[in-house]
Each structure stands twice: as C-alpha cells, then as structure tokens.
Length: 361
Image (cartoon, rainbow, N blue to C red; front, side):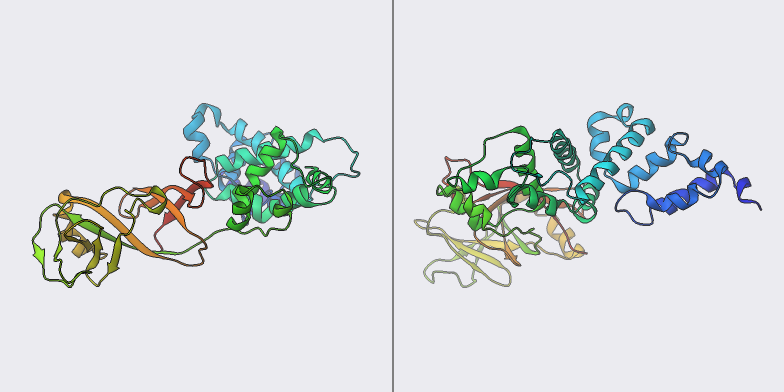
C-alpha cells in the first residue's frame, strides 16, 4: 500500500509515537516523517493538525493542574499548540545557557531573561513531575541558574555586588523568579541557610553546594485509644503502669513536634511507651498494623483513636525538621503537607516549604 494512502488516524498514531519516543525536549523524532512527502507534511503540519500537537504536548508536559485551574475552554488544541512551540523555544534557549551570562559587566539587562524565568516559574507551579524533568534533564536549568547567580558576569549581577563589599543585589521581579527557581530545582544546604539567619552576607551562598533532597522515610504509626485496660508491659518507670487509655499528651514546644519538654519515649515491638513529666501514667500507643487483614480488624477500633504518634527513620537527612501534613487519597494515599526548620524561633518566619511522600511499592 502506498504511504500516501495510509488512513489519517493511523498516520497520526505513527506520528505521535515518533514524536514521543523520548519524553524530553522538542518532538524532533517527527521531523523525518514530515520530510517524507509533501502530502505527509500537509497532513501532519503543526499549522493543519492541532489535535496531534496537543496530544504531543500532553505527553511531554503536565496539563492537569492548568486544566483544573483554567478549565477546558483555556486548554483547547490551539492554545496547547502555541504553548508547545513557546516551551520548545524557551527550553532550547535555557539549554544553551542563553542570556545567563552578560557579554560585559556594563551590558544592559535583557528582557528575554525575565521571559525565560517567568515561563519556567509557571511550569514549576503547574508541575506534577514532567515539567520539572523537562527543565532539569533536558534544558539543564540547574546550570543556567548557577551561571546566572554565581558566574563573574552572571546576569543577576550578584558577583559584582559580592566583590563590591559583600552586599546583596537589589530586589527585582526577575531576580525573585530566579531565586524561586533556584529553591524549586536545586535547594541549597540547610547549614548555609542557618548562617544567613545569623546575618551572613551573600558570600556564604557563593561558597555553598547545591543539592536535591530525595529521601526514603521508614514510618511506624501508633494509636492511643479512648478505651482500654491497664497493661502489665514493662514501662519506662517501674513504679508506673502502662495504660492504653487516658488523656493525650499536653501540647508542648511546636519546634519539638509539640512534645512537652522532658517527655520520654521508648519504642517496643508492640508500640511506644510515653512518659510525660508530672503525669502518673505511662501512655501505651499501640502499633498500627501494616498488613491489610490485620488493618481491617484494627479498623473496628479506629473510631476510638484519640491521638496518633508517628516515629521512624530518614535516610540521608541532616538537621532537625518539623513536618506536619495529611493523608490524601485511598489505600495508596500520599502524605503531604509543610515542613519547617527548628532553628528559627516560633515568632519568626522560618525556612519552610511543601513536601509529599508516596509509599514505595
């Protein structure tokens, strides 16, 4: 069968496959197919086949967040095609480090820098994984941002201010976008931030390393029930018996996960024993089961759970952090919320951000 007689829907499936063999970068795999013949070009051109390129956009970039926010009327194929073209151009410019470094220190600011940064920032606001991969793995924006901030002729002009008395560059919208992207994509080490809290100048950032925190958490959940009887389990204090009931712990220091000062905690095979100063009883928090059949049996008591304590370990973590979040979803739910540093006083806005955890399968 001649190629020119291939049905349109079959041809579009072939084109979509060719364009998305790799999810990163522009759909360059489509070029050989477009050059096959004039008829193929006419049937697959971006000017005549908006549906095809909207599908390519949906594979390469995140779309659900913008659809939820703006609705289907603002995410039509025509809109997505224009956005695909714009993003491909911008990603290529970032990949080549365009405008990150000034030709001379006296060169004027380029309006393209603000355009690139604002577009990348919007991509991160709509990010569900794919946008970030395009920026980091294809566009290599981490390198662009390092040049922008730390090169001697970086377009932020931070180096010039650093050499001129270790002073901070003036605040601008463009620099704010670049700093947000730096934190989104690279995240400087916490020790550097602690120095900044103490009043250090920008040279501390100049000497810092940049890392991305990807951690494995091993968590164990424990419940304090409203009903129960005294237990003969060995407690933290031999003169006090462990109980599975009683009032929850009093609220304590928010920077110490709200545990009262001096609280003693010991983990056992069945749960954790908690002794609060100035209280007679040792509270016995029962370990929540991990197996489904055990959980269904345990679920009968869930309506009487009055307090929950989660303990565990984190691989590769440094420092002390306060996490507070919620379980979102069904049996394969995610745990998401906000984290905060524990060095900054409670009455001062600290180093904080969002987190999300997914169960390893």
